[in-house]
Image (cartoon, rainbow, N blue to C red; front, side, top):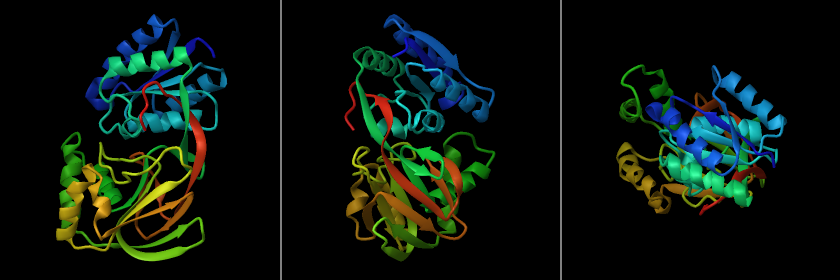
Length: 300
């Protein structure tokens, strides 16, 4: 393993936490005897090109300092390689880190964990989802949740997460189930009216909403959570339970497990790791052991 580590930083993550978190992470790595190269990038495309170059040149590890959006970008560079990925989670959602039991918004602890794992060569291979040539680590969302994302992304104000709360209220006012066609890898087809369909490699999205609470990132399968046709009142009763994962026992919720999932619906955008990946139809494939993560202290 090369002693040069690439620190991939989103300076704007978590309202500036990314820039502040880079220093303790870099200090922990240097104290452990590693040299550190920092990559920021002028935009997402430039940043991805730079980290792909670092991986191709044999960097010892890629350490993402930011939120789930930056981690998703990092996955595009390291998936299918043996370059290990470390995460210093300081964004808004941090669901990739949550799914792996990594420190969240504790940059010094996360940096120390990464350095310790590198010194001890402690890594773990985990699964990723793939849609075409795009990789994702946590959840592919479609339906009510992706409509909230669509609306929130169109809103200029207010700033931060509050606009998504407002977007959710607006979507509830216009709420109606969506006709989905769901095809699993055994060839079975389900025509369903659903509030949402979430394809989970990891357990959560949206900053700790455990929509696929029982997902295992090393079993080679997605957990597919379907919230069926329900009233607005039922959705409001079920929704708060998602933070503990107890929604899975509600009669309106079903869970399937599959390595390949095809989703078809009209006027629905798919969001993976909180990032738009395109309109349905989409096909997601679970790829076993697609990325090597730095694993000191992992519990997931």
